[in-house]
Each structure stands twice: as structure tokens, then as C-alpha cells.
Image (cartoon, rainbow, N blue to C red; front, side, top):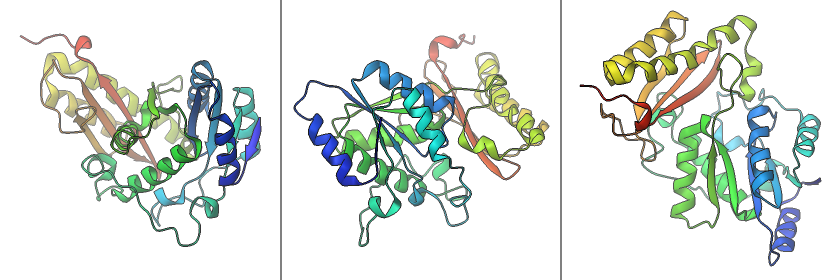
Length: 289
């Protein structure tokens, strides 16, 4: 495994791979790897001849009051995990390499970034502008055939897929299922912030999503969402949002069992912001009379 620190080094690798019959995969990460990241790396290894993992804590997607300085980091541990997973190259640039002096370009996706986590009440669309700007730079630097993302960040994956399509990147965006702890909590680097009691309470997030899925076919969407919110509140969690959206467009979902529905949630647990979602497919819904 080779570690690349400079954009020029990544460009040189990309140039060396061009013209060769190899399939390249990219797994973007902000480090502090967990089993969710490993599942993406392993999927990339199965599908691709060469695997690039980026490791970059992107300052452009943090608000001034967020946890950029406290965000968990353990680079040596991440390198060891990446190598065990079969990564060929780790692209780990410094912020100055990604955003050099005079950097003045922003990549924005409209429509998908003003709702859910993009609602200014919660984070604001500037978060997604930071994501799409850095991902566009990564796709340009690595030029992968595939880029792998997790379903836990469903809105982020939707925004990135739209950006890649609109800007005609040749990369196919692959979204893989969320990897969970035994109690259902979605794996996240930020789970490390949680105390044991908060960690136990946070498991109610997945329980609330499952209850919504179970009740929707019989009770209807509004009642199912209300039950999910009640499950969270009973655990002492007040969600920022707990909403049903159409996947792909993120438009508000109606009470239609013939349509797939994305139920998404964000909640603060002991000062740690957690997100999760469940995709309710039409074939998993029993028709109501």
C-alpha cells in the first residue's frame, strides 16, 4: 500500500493507470475507520483492480460551531485497517493541498440541499457545498470508475450522485447498505463521543425507524411517523427531523404504498449529532384496504 500526500502524487498515479485495462475504485473517508468503512473498502476490492481510499477531514463541511478540532483521528490505525482491507493507495492530503491559497471555487447542488440536514435550522446547505466541492476534487484527482458511499448518509449520497451526473463525471456512484452495531445503531466515527448511557439511548433511533416501517402498511404514513417520533421521545431523544422523503428527489413523501419511501432522522444525543434512515420499498409494504 502506498500513501500519497500531495495532489501531484495522486495525479501521477492516475496518469500511470490511464491506458491500462484496470478498473479503479475510490472510497472517500474522513478517517477513524469503522466496520462501515471496511465494508465499502471490501466491496471496492471485489469490484475493482485498484482501490484508492481518501483520508481527509474536510474543513469545508464543518460549521464554525461544529467539532472539526475534536473530530476523532488516528491515522496510523486507519492505514493499518486500509492495508488489511486490500487498499492499494491512500490519498491523505493536507488541507493546504486541497484548498491552496487563492482557492475560490464552490460546487453547489440546488434543490436537494435545502431540506433535511440542509435546512438552515439544522446545518444549512453550506455543509453540502463543502461535501460536493471536495468530492468533485477527489473524483477529478483519482478519476475512478466507481466511488463507494454508505446508505447511512442517504442525503449526501443523493447529492453526490446528482452532482456526478450533472457534471458528467465518468464515475459511477455506488451506494451500499448501512453497517450497524448489534443493537442497530448505525456505525459512525462520532459514536466514539457517546457515553455508555447515551450509547444505549441512541439505539432507539433504529428502533424508531423499524417501528415506522412496520406500522406504515396498516396505519398510514402520518401515524407511522408519529409512532417513530414517540419512540425517540420516550428514550429522551428529541429529533431535529423525522421525515419521509422520496429517494432520488428528496421531495416530501405521501401516503402511497406503491412508492419507495426514505424515512430519515437526525437527532442530538448527549451533544453528538447522529443521522440514520430506512428505505421502505413497495414490495415490503402490504397494501391497505
